[in-house]
Picture 1 (tube, rainbow, N blue to C red):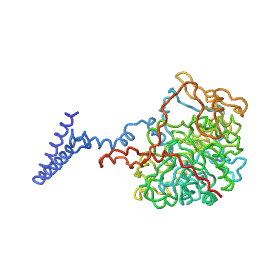
Picture 2 (cartoon, rainbow, N blue to C red):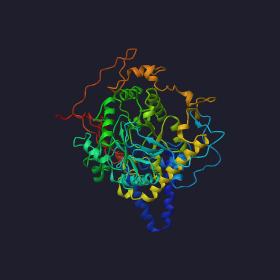
Picture 3 (tube, rainbow, N blue to C red):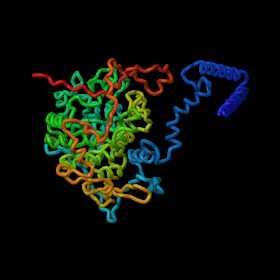
Picture 4 (cartoon, rainbow, N blue to C red):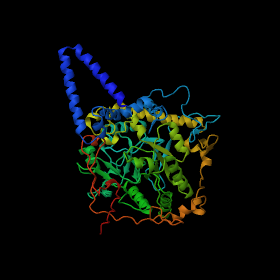
Length: 586
């Protein structure tokens, strides 16, 4: 490698000498100036102490940083195949872009996927397909205690906050949702004016920070909530318990992305990171969660109230079911967010190794609600990497009544999967507050694209169902989706899992559910049954006093500043549970 670099350098110098000679004396002065510049750079590289590669290979070692900076582009545009890109492969991205433009999204010459690969899934078509329904199917959201039910589209804009998204991106999605008659979830960042601009139907998301409905202490403010929930465009309320990208962690909006508009929308100060705690202060048990659902339903005038979470412990899900049964309070809907969800930037450990994927989480909650005799009162939503018509149909088969999509909607708005959402340097203006970058996103054009993408994708889902011989989602069943489990065998989802009969958990829970059902307690979250064998561990360490927030270091900062040791007691503010609100006396 070193020999190659030396030969390349000598060749370059030879070429520059020829060029300089062709320009006469002035050319030689130019080459001399360049040589001095390289000499100075080389001396700097040798004496600096931050980068070992530059000390050993002055000047030439800088090629490493150049190649590192363009590696994502090289990977995406020149190396990855149509079906192996991550998080979304090239075929999926191309389909989204084509549908957003209203262009032909067909592909010739057959599938490029390995249909014999373990895990490959496919839908069963009918020998006698039926005509496609002339109208977009909608799902009624609203249980027995809801007085203002809402008819939901099969696919909607998932939770993305103003602040995480630029105002132009929020406006474009709002415009598309208004044109297509589908829901835009606000994200936990509050109800911004841009969510109301074009009159789209909204589901207002309330997170652990209670942004837009919080008091000075950061706790839930029922008066402010009731005022905003009365808005005619707010059709429902979603309580966010966790999200797929980082379940159990909370979130941070960096101070650099907080503008006066964002601060006003969220009710937070300027100049400091905006922290969403890891848990809620308004409730701490399944029973209290149901009471909070009832409180929001009353304050909102009877609008649909539900909650969103990434599934963790099955015991927690069953504890929620027990709380519903004991209190008689049920949410109108529950949205399951899969661990493959990713609009929120998160530590790699959380993105890759925490939380239940959507397929398993969705089927678990659906199965638990059926077994507890509650499924008929509650609608289920699915969120997490939903981008195509087949994605929608698969989730409907697995137990969902409707779906949400976030990253696909971002791509319809212009996202190129640059994965710079948390840096405030989104190159297409979708996930940034930089006015220079944001201005590139034309609201009229991108709003039309969001509308096109939704319409054509839902239309394709309806066509798929018609090809399967059904005219409505309610006619789908688990036998219509099959999965390859080894080289020679495929099985339907009806046979892959133990499905509970309605009310089975209440009468005689069997097949692996009995222990979790017995352990589940409406008075607490978590698993507490002792194991059957010894599991002695060291006692939990005592809390360390005097912790400090870590200094925020954005990507690439270490190439410009001396790296310093972190504080010995650095904390993770977004990982802290919220302090419980103290009830006021009197």
